[in-house]
Image 1 (cartoon, rainbow, N blue to C red):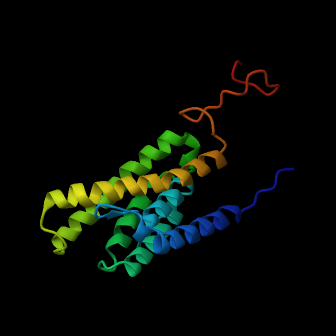
Image 2 (cartoon, rainbow, N blue to C red):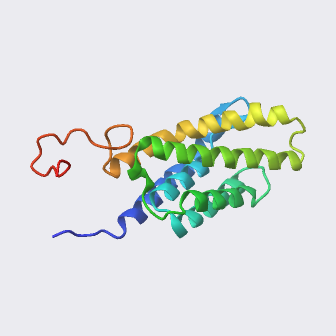
Image 3 (cartoon, one colour):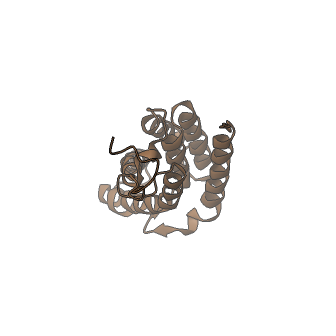
Length: 186
């Protein structure tokens, strides 16, 4: 008999959210490269969007963005808007995209993270934080992207293994040779 634990994903999302909140408050200000810092709110949004998708990703993106805005010295609502849009874009399929494999999930997150961070820093030009485009691109966006992407790697690795696709680049397992349940040669 197979039992479905409906609250398992909710608990997992709350635990990851709490961990990302603690990391954002305690570690992110100290993990900097140039003028760029890691963004754990973006990491959390990416994990929820790629694992659950749909309405959960949009809500998680808004909540994470709002927490980021309230703990940073930026205008309230900017990161909330960007992470809501990112959660929607990454989670539009409403399925566990970590099941596609490690590289596919990293590619999706990387594109979304780069778009969010570039939009965020370009909006900061309009708000007068900097007037130099090279400073925004080279000293802020690229280091922030690199650090955020590196912080996403352990979460993605864990989610891909939880999805049951730990082997190979595309997620296909190669260790099923000789199995009694092998149906690949039918």
